[in-house]
Length: 549
Image (cartoon, rainbow, N blue to C red; front, side, top):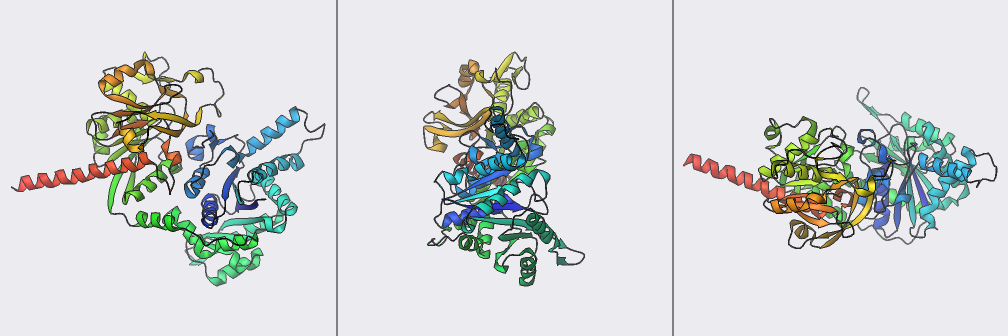
């Protein structure tokens, strides 16, 4: 039987419950325990697939094709494991299940209510992974903040589980804020006290308090929090701001969070934590030997969480190359032929990011042209690959009307077209080409060199594809389809034969990059950008020497 840890949050959102949950899981995993994490979100959407990136950040996609909360990306990156549909549940999915059961007559005429029917379904989902027999510990993060109306059924479900389970099989970790008032020059514990009191009023009593803070907590403050929140002083954990999220597991190790959890859950005979690889990664991350600038061409750059997995993949790839990757956000909506050189000339590489809709696509196409013509390392993901195809069609093949039917439904040159199986789809939620699909790679290509393989599997999230009607023309002109799906012939990877590093992929490689296994596409792209940067310096040096002579 698995043991369960519930992570709740109070005072304010965005405190980092996902990072704390992932850090605790990493520490327990490093001691030899089998751990997984799940996220319960209180919004009524079935999943975040139809949410605007400005509303909710990126939509993370699992191997089995689930569109999930971005916190699952943190879970995978920290634990180096795959999550699934079962790891992310929303209020919408809970209510949908209960209503379907009611329509099918499964409740035998009973009046369907929040208690017990909704809470029973929540508990069933909470216990699902634990009942699989695959894990020693299941950590469940509750989205939102204690006191939110929409969170109440989840908190009530936790209360019932605390009552139903043996005391040593279930515990609650509560993340809260200890703000610093600069005028008074002191940390204030009252918000934490109120947050815990509110949680206790709902019948849930936290076993551990994790206090987010900008300044160290004194022993006196820890004792004060412990006294008023009814926990032991050693169960008050300081979580100071860190320079990178990857330092948090080590900070939690110093605070003894994992030891407190193991004692509460009465888990004995565990090994000492093995974090050698993690420390090695941090060593390289904190002490880079070089620096590059990568332009991220996107249209959601105002919210960094919209490209969270891409940004983290660059962190992983930068550490492997012992290189500091500085991301320069460039809004595609404001790139024109007149200003593109000024915006991009100082960069060492260009990544054109995924997205949907016509806004900003012409700027992306202009950026691709600049990278192609100036031999700048280029990497296109999903829509980024499609923009590379359109740019090549317009400016190399001379097809001025080339476009995607997503942007212009009546284009007479649809080099990017809606997938055949998508043409009958009416509903938007969960109906894209989602999850892991195979890709065969041609030998001798750049993609083959990067992956060192001829068969790979990558995750997808798209409706439009490369139109194979035009494939022969592209190949003849030098844009090579170096990767295809073996079942459908769908072009998965394109690359330029006469360019130092120019590659576009229909899939989302950022979704599979982890600390222990950085994605090869990002690793090689950073390497190419380093070479480009070094060449620029060398060219400037040679130019100065000639001018001096």
